[in-house]
Image (cartoon, rainbow, N blue to C red; front, side, top):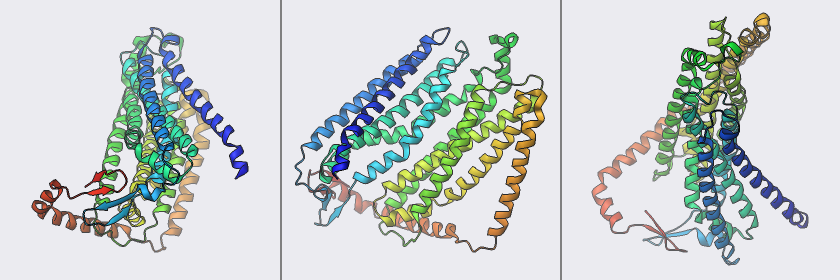
Length: 463
């Protein structure tokens, strides 16, 4: 314990250095449009100013809540702050401290990856005079600022939590940050939406060829009209998938949370989280690689087929990666949100299909990435077109053989049919929901009359 206490000062110094570096990161982003672009673009500066206002306002709120939490008497235990008493005198305990930190941790690290994408996407904008440049800069800027907001909120809350002495103070601190955590929840989704929104127009602001005689804007517009739809289609498909995933998982979580009797389930939700996080982290490697390929690579004006194939498969790989990351993050968030082990297992059972989907998406992203690399030499080094085709083609064949062998070996194994169990959970919930709707005339007057639970500590009520 003594050794850990001696590390407090270096740990706080590291937190301070991270805080300063991220703020300097944001300042540098704001100067891109005025320092590197001709004509000058002020959009990155505008986004930076707005980002500073939002981020610093949030950090001041967190600091004030920390000061209030530090004044909570050390004799107060966490259980004293989470005891709820309803109108019938029944008590329940709903601790939030560990849950809130776990939810922040699921989104913040991955958001910084998208923030890095957005930073370089604006830093290497070679056609600031293009029509869609302002839209692109604003979208990527919003993604970058939102990602930094999420990262700074996460690191600042953790830094302040460490400084609090007792579990009671930490519980009070996290409960007082309900508004901040709600905004962080929105940011965990919106930064991906901003990124994809900007990616939709990337094809119309990207520099498609670096040859001097074709570098003029009219020629770039012709190439953008020819190839730019690839990014547009990929971005729109990703946006639709992200919205669908977020909506469906939120609906599943609400369904499970509203169950009056949670069905018996032995589904291993921790293993589910481990699997989906593994697939998402693995897929993010391909996504990061192909994003920069799509951003920087030039076309081969003499080989349209190879150019289309190279960019198309790269965009598909990026789409698969983004969807995997969002799905894994949302599953982790809602599993941590649910109160009991039974609720978590039930939600994991209802959402287990994502485990198989993410596994297949990872496999598909590896194949699409390798296929894109097959055409890489033909696009970049015309005289050596056979190099990447040979090596990557061999990798595709070898991977297909290995995966086929594994699938054949696993075929005789007896697999648990979770889909039937999941349907039973949904049917049970639907029956309970129907019963509640039928008795709505009885329930609603009770709610309006104050049929609520009241916090024994602060008097707050929840229906």
